Amino acid sequence: MLSRLYRIIIIGLFSSGLVYAQEEVKGTTIPDSLQATPVDAEHDPAQAYEELRRFARAFSLVKNQYVEPVSDKELIDAAIAGMVDKLDPHSAYLDKEDMIDLQEETDGEFGGLGIEIGEEKGYIKIISPIEGTPAAKAGVLPGDLVVSINDVNTKEKDISDVIKMLRGEPGSAVTLKVSRQGKLLDIHLKRELIKVKSVRSKLVGDIAYFRLSQFQTNTVNDLVAQIRSIKTTPKAIVLDLRNNPGGLLNVSVGVVQIFANTQGSIVSTKARNQVVEEFSRYIPDNILQNTAVLKNLPPWLHSVPMVVLINVGSASASEIVAGALQDFKRATIMGNRSFGKGSVQVVMPIDDETGIKLTTARYYTPSGRSIQATGITPDVVVSDTEKGDLFSSPREVDLDDHLLHESVPEKKAETKPVDNTEVKIVDAKNMYEFGSDQDFQLQQAIRFLKGEKVNQGVIQAQSDGATVSGVDSRVGMKHESRDAKEVTKDAKNKELSDKGSSTSVPSSNLNKVPEKALDKAIDKVLEHKGD
Image 1 (cartoon, rainbow, N blue to C red):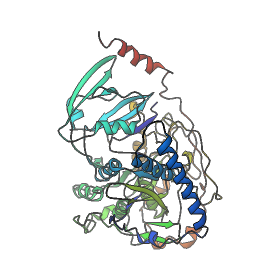
Image 2: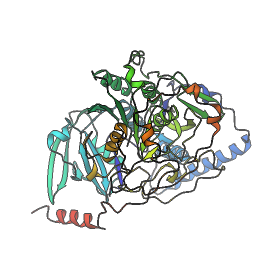
Image 3: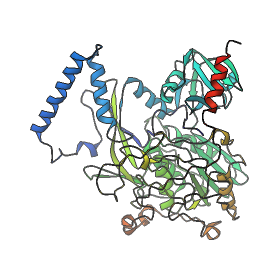
Image 4: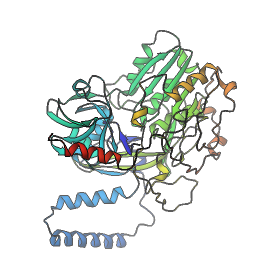
């Protein structure tokens, strides 16, 4: 069972729901809602001065007494990082490399090899090469274990560090030493500019199937382009947000606009100062992008029955989309309960090269729901496979120092023991091809839309309120979506049945790896590498 898995383009843990502060560095401009934040009423200038004196004393002691010389910059960077990292799982100090990585993540372009990687028992495992990339051309295969990169051993290395090792300037050379079926192979590659497509689509019979892997700068334009390429009128839609960790908040708003005929609020945010901001229309990040991209879309987008697929890997911006389409009654949500990241991060520069990613608000669905630490509950729960879920994965509620749901009394979030803080997205042995008839959840969504009986698989821990009741009555329905203005004020104050839920899915017995078997196999290969 994989302990951690990222797409190669993802750096860090769910850096989604992002809003970028305008960058003026020498006098940084911050969003209006944050500028209005009053000084904390409990702030005591004298006490703050004393605390700063304590910090200065600690700085002086380390600077002058530590066994090895440490630069001022190293100490200050570490102090800022420690201050921010302790707040919650999504706030972070961003050094120069981190700022570049974050921009690449949201743009979907970077210099690299084009592979999806995971970590298994301390080893880096190839999940899949991306079609048409250097990795695919060089013959990198799913299941290959990366022993070293440019002769640097990767065992026990943090996966984020390995990602940085794999990336680099287009045209630069890199050698991967991989273990494949007991043999060591050297694979020589040259990095290229990787442009990751966040949108994929196909017609499955007469059903339009769209998969979004992230909410990037170009996602709305790419999705619209693929919609316009469909020359027939589909009878139904499947929007697949499984394993989508999120992205840009404004892009999620645009995606909702595509599928829901609404003029009202799609998502709202509330900051510490209780200032509420509502987002009801898509505004591109880039002024060069077409602001009229959502005009004159095919009418079937708002009328045919629709299913949205989610799972534990669906977070933040994905949950904004699923929650809005659920509130508007535009779509039936199927799959597993989502991750539960209901917070917004703002990237604010400190100087010309560094910044902080700071949690500044919670977000709310059109009916006023906060999904922080609870997630989106599907209307119809369907397990990963017919035999049950592949594994147990941590959600937001399991992470150290997570923000509490508003229904929970103010106190420090309790730490729950988990083996990692990243969502384990999918077992490599069960990564089906896009639109495959072996994708159990997708096939159940198609059956639902066709009016056929849905096989829920083995439901090991069913989320509150998620059933198959009403399946027959909803199939083939004229999905008359509600405008946001029709979502009543009472609904905004209604407590959810899953409020405060922290139910986690028990571990499945599927795909268990014998203890130390992988270590022994690799060690055996390394012992005979000179043979």
